[in-house]
Image (cartoon, rainbow, N blue to C red; front, side, top):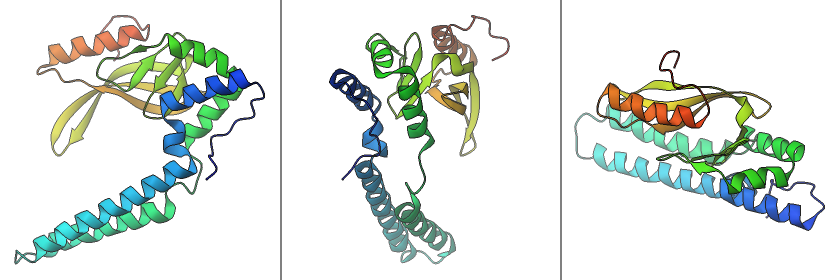
Length: 207
């Protein structure tokens, strides 16, 4: 099965460096034809399993409406992933190819070898690039802000360190890590450690 991650490198050394970057970020594992098919199968299987569990639950209760809705949603999720996932190019893959072609594999590889991992995160920070081992690559110069993002999780407030990306390597926000402090002071301390790694000033204001 042919990978979608092929790049027009001619030198063997550059191909080897590209391969190491690709494996480090997990790009082909996620976005190649094999990776896409694997995600389709896992999602479909998950949808069927949850639908079966909700169906069993329906047999044991008189109020079947909610469980029936959840069963249908599970089936629709599995079918939609099977039919539509991977039909369009993934932005993360497109940006990865663009950055690698424009900057060269050697430059990115050299930065990757000295990148520091942000504790509790999938992200490694180099001097020029941000490496997300969940399948993303950004130029550090495209990180416009690092801030605390509040999100709702079933009625509970959850706090994350996040970064805004804008430029040639992407647009939008990216979650860096969850802030696990028990109180605001601990969360701010965790956040400031992350923010300072990106070279932003140590002020709390404006986050």
